[in-house]
Image (cartoon, rainbow, N blue to C red; front, top):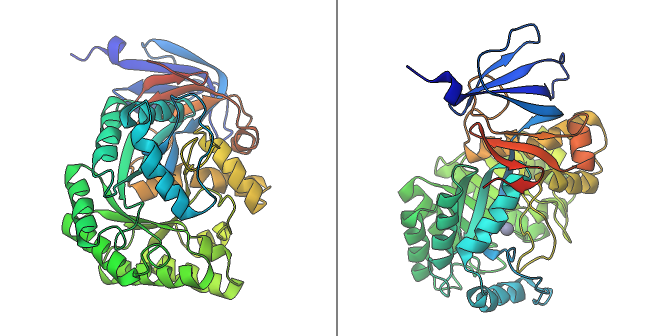
Length: 404
Ligand SMILES: [Zn+2]
């Protein structure tokens, strides 16, 4: 017979984002939400935990990050690259292998901060380059395994130094090896600007994706017309290869740098090809028209991208703060739009990552967090410290600190 006392947990004194009546409780059983009990229902026999009247929100999704590049776990290291993408790429190759803390340790430091901020699912790009081989991937896989009870992870095999310019077929073989070693998607980067060979890069990475039945997520920083050309080439391949819903373009700065008629046409093209957009708010670049894209049917989701790493001194792994940055840049002020923004940082990301049963509902995995906020809009606007974070019904962080 199942021992209810051991496996059940009753969460009391909480508020749900639907603004419904007080006094409801959540019963967790075997890692899932077994029931949301109405106020009038008697308490089932289970240990209880008081959530201090805080708001319960579904787990956040960091849909674009770089666990292998973070400098968390180390004393402050000043930014060392010149203000050009190629200088930052070279800086990675010089700095990362000589750091006194290995990839698994640094990635673990960052993952625990993600969890403490209420993140339940991440998609991390991991550098696969001729200089690194699969070493960064091996470190991130180690961190993934060590934190599997607290956060789920997708890994993108990311050719940070390019594909064609970084060895062509040899580089493609390395990406193929990364998928065989445990990466979940194939990455790409600026096929025109970095590789100067869009066909060479895109045919190569889509071929790997097709062979292994995995998705594609491409960093596209290219501006204006050049970026639009690459985006068209990506959408063409997604459609022709039947990969709708499995291709993501990260950043898509070009979408923010062309006139509105071209934005609308590109949005329709992406929606038809089922190509999603990941955004972190486009620091220093043109921000894609996120709401226009969503209205056209494009799945838009958010990620922190670089978090105190070799590319950026900014960030604390908080997806609510990230949502606030994006909302501030997009001039989002009304509650209904803030609720949409919250979805981009939670359920929208879960959908693209293929996370099933996301949200606070009976039967779903118990991935959620509490926060001393009035509602979702207030939670983004102020993004105060998270109260308690649960993953599969287990308490994994409390008051902003990882629970060992
Ligand atoms: Zn990135």
